[in-house]
Image (cartoon, rainbow, N blue to C red):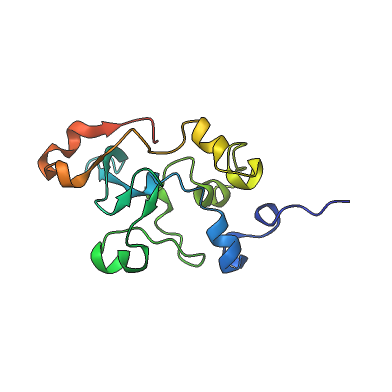
Length: 147
């Protein structure tokens, strides 16, 4: 009998660092600037991303210093999951926290990032850096493909 993969066996808070980090599919949707509707509390993703995001590689150019340079950067930890509602609905951390399964395109299921890229579940080619957008214009950039 084959043992279930760690993400189906372990709760998020029991995963080791390597397991935890491997859950990230690298879509970079968490690097999208989000707006919260003050009346409804709904989170809206914009097509605007952090200035430090390498849009082709979907990775942070300043990962080690990100919290210093961007104090609002979401940093998820196994024992601190209060920020998950800010994450996109396809985020592995959020999916598992909500008791759902990883999608077939997730690198842990498919074996590589190619399936994720082919499924359109990355920000590549769909976003603009915050360097080129004024804060007051952010509502004009709200998108629904990341929800």
